[in-house]
Length: 433
Image (cartoon, rainbow, N blue to C red):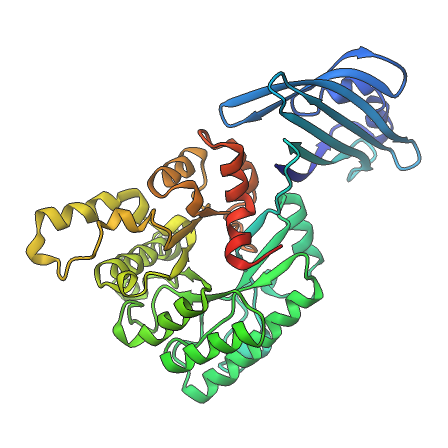
């Protein structure tokens, strides 16, 4: 398993003093997470240990630490630590540290880039929840720009953020704003949008893939759009909202769309649009940005519940849906959905083919990691299984920037399970090599 991380640390000393410390190799090696010098062989080779901690478990690797570069001109140090434990597992850590000038003469910045490899396994870290926009398409319905970070004209800031977070690939998506557009406008908008998404990905094919867009308010047209996106444009997924202009995704009139997604085997990324029907009442007003904080995960909870109870997932057993924000509130309280079948069977019907909790685990539903704490992610995995979880960051919105760290610090996971969450599952579903 390989993870790449970029960090910046402000220092309260000038760059000359900081560089003097950095050239003290034993001291610097001690700054590498879990590394320590035990013996100096010569000026560039040392014996030492590397201790790798993953959640509550740790492993100690005895081995070598080598100075690969020590450049006073650029004030850059590169160290390589590698070793093996008694069980045959191996680990290595490649650290590049550079001292940069700070905001004034008395300060500096330590810039560190680390690559950690456990058991020689390489995995692409894939973010399935990253937003963007296409202004040309938005102009067709006069939709405003919600955040400058959605623009893709200059991706340098976005890619720098990905690098800092340890993200190799973003799966771009666009929150639906076109669900009330007339058919002709919707057709043109989706055509422009999907073709532009292809251009975004082609400009940086190693960093971006995308979910196609579709006009679900016109289900037959949406089915055609998905087929064109997959067969002609090369998409492996499609994005949808949590409802369609007030209609539930489980409404039978959307069956043509779901049937086409199942037929083509694409991953559907479902992102909520909020519970706008509650907003006029004022229940989500006041402090706390409740229209988003509560409203977004609530819509996901409602949408998934209808897909289960109205039989949509039973009708289309090959569907694969990834629900944003950890699936909303449903995974945390899904047993109540099982209980309603037992306690009020006359209020549920026709019954779904399985208990509602089974749909969380049986391969149709997937969830991103935006649940904020290791304990919350541990619980989500306990309710769904590690094979149903994929990294999400919500970029460019600042909800989180530490999802790789979150996966690595969540207890109870094997290396193979972490590899799946970090990118293995998303790679399989989206055809990323």
